[in-house]
Amino acid sequence: PQMPMIDGQPHDSGGIDGRQIVERIINDSPYHLKSGGKLIMLLFDFLGVDQRFSQKPSLFEIMKTHGFKPRLIAKQKRFPSKSGQTYKSLDYIKKIFPMYKFCFDKNGRLFHHVLIIEGRLDKKLFSESLI
Image (cartoon, rainbow, N blue to C red; front, side, top):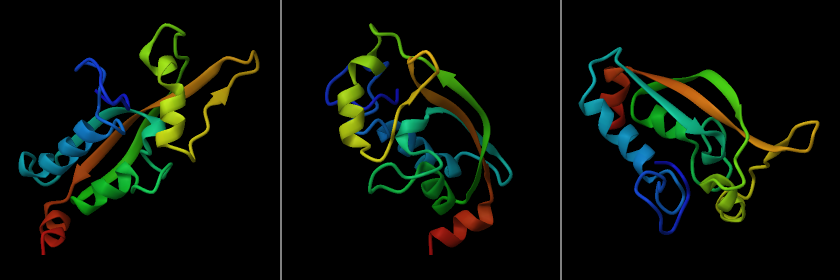
């Protein structure tokens, strides 16, 4: 669940900015992984994964403060269905992430990217972040 929503179905809603559950996973996972362990997630780019789209730090920045070395594994275009939650939430997403700009293909179809990211945990970096 990573859709920015005030209220919504549990399978969609990631909280007001869509990052509530994702950030909890990042914050808690160092306690469950060994050094060198990997956290792999599929995320919508408008959440501010590898760059900021609001005043909040990017998810990569948050991962680094928790001892992860994040990197992008894959990037895929996603064309939201007009009947889907992403399309229904476009105005709200634009409000929450004012620096994000949705893309359009040569046929004028709106899209965004789905990113697969990996964070490799360095327990030494995580321990230093606790000091």
